Image 1 (cartoon, rainbow, N blue to C red):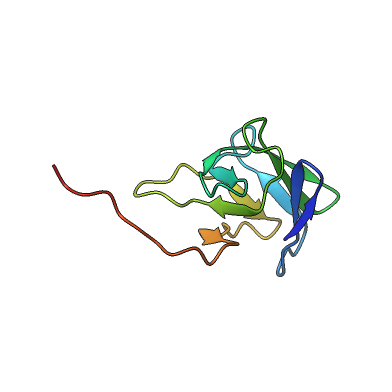
Image 2 (image 1 turned 180 degrees about the vertical axis):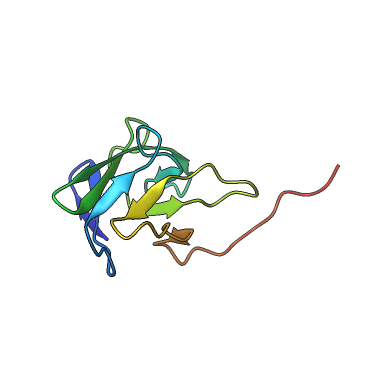
Length: 99
């Protein structure tokens, strides 16, 4: 992960044959700024890397992918293997209280 202005650039290992979004635009990415509040993000593949951004996170510090109970994700490598859910942060995980 490399923050660059209002974007985060993600590099991956094991991208045999490159990266691809199956079924349309990339989905499943969230980004946060220094406030640590994650928002859904725009993501695109550019030159073998994934560029993540959101107008709601002007200075992003972390990215999560597929970070949900039932994630809708579609990032694959050229060999047809899906990217696993991941996060670039080490923030303490909290859960919402049950009502």
